Image (cartoon, rainbow, N blue to C red):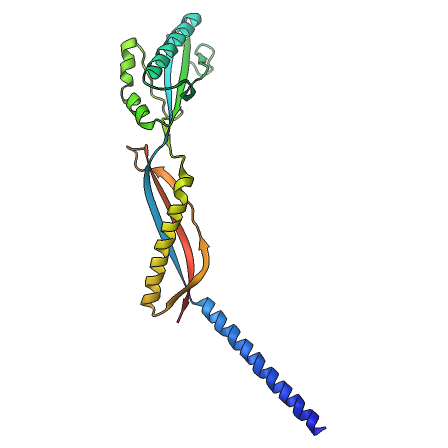
Length: 234
């Protein structure tokens, strides 16, 4: 009986030692996970737009509807000739159907309009030749020689510049942002007399593409911020 108690006591003691070992390991592991640093890494780049959409808006007003349509067709032909003579292809041009407003039937009209009809037409140029289109926009006053007045597109028909090769620069920007985040984490670890461990959690962050400023919408500013949690070790 005494030997049996001795064996049971030894087994119990060994079990307690093993349990203590696992508890200590768990506590140490928890403590290590609790020591971490959260950093952010920034990457920014400026790129020229590689796509432009240029709505060319023009109007005709009058009382004779057939004559107005003839005028619209003549103006459309002159603008198309101008574009094509300056290297713009047919596939870059689309002609929208004219929009006719009958001012006499408009419920908001006060009945004092001089002309009954207001016809608005839009020719849209969509091209990757951004520099060439910018040059044509700057020199569109030449159309005045043919009696063609291009009106301001306003908020409804603005000139738009876009950057469509985002996927080409995305990996490099993520790499740079991650590198900058690690540099910040390494400096923090150095200042705290610690060593930088593995990444615990990482968030790529959201990319933003904006105009560089209001005066240069054809230059795009792209930005991304990554958030990374690193473990710290003694």
